[in-house]
Length: 308
Image 1 (cartoon, one colour):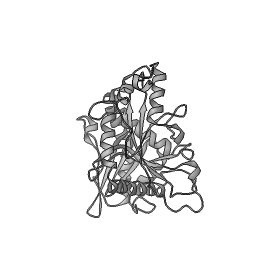
Image 2 (tube, one colour; image 1 turned 120 degrees about the vertical axis):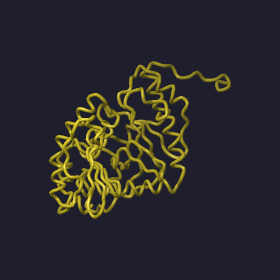
Image 3 (cartoon, helix red, strand yellow; image 1 turned 120 degrees about the horizontal axis):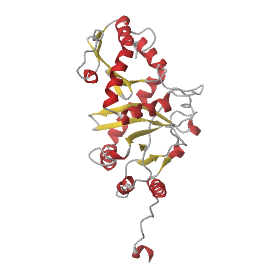
Image 4 (cartoon, helix red, strand yellow; image 1 turned 45 degrees about the vertical axis):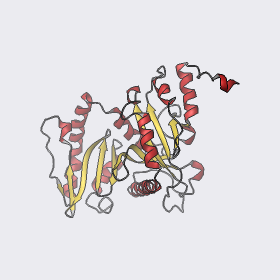
């Protein structure tokens, strides 16, 4: 954090992210990822009193890429990587033109809209990380963050943890990384109070770090101290560009039971866009009703015993 703040060796990188809405900075303890279109354009890891920088050569698809020195000890070393970012963006653009990663790209857009856009002060959700992976917790999540209701914005101790799974199009609803599998995995993880508390602390720390770096925008009240994350977790499925005529999602959700250890919600956009509000989060029953209306499917018939 000291190096990312004013006067630090990495401060120029922080300023670049502040000015460039296509970039996102994610802090992971001893290393940092800078994301572009949902992919890591720069990886920095603490080592030997400095930092080791890396760019994923896979994005170059076998073509040569001229990179600065991978060692960062002085501000000018960081400057060289900042200067290289436009070229690295073009390299990644070429890669994504043929190997689309729409889900990851839109994850970053969701985080930007709720954290840093012109309407971020009005939303009730903040995303602190994308592509979150914690082997100790057995967690791999598209997004993590916190919910902070508008009515509670003068009390930063009333934040609750949020985990977001994003699906782009109907092809990602089932299978090994499908909706049912995610819910089952999260039930196991969030049943453990130690893992829940560890996740809460991680979200708290990430939020405060992003706030200190000017990468979260909202109107703080004059006595703001530090966000505290606690309470029952909320797991949100954000299903981008669902085909309303398809019954695939409805068939999957008909087999899902309400989880015991978290509140299951489905994001229904406020007209359009990804600004997240509590009233846009539908419970499972309400969401299935909406799907039936869209697909023009009748609700399941009640059994004779139920009717009796």
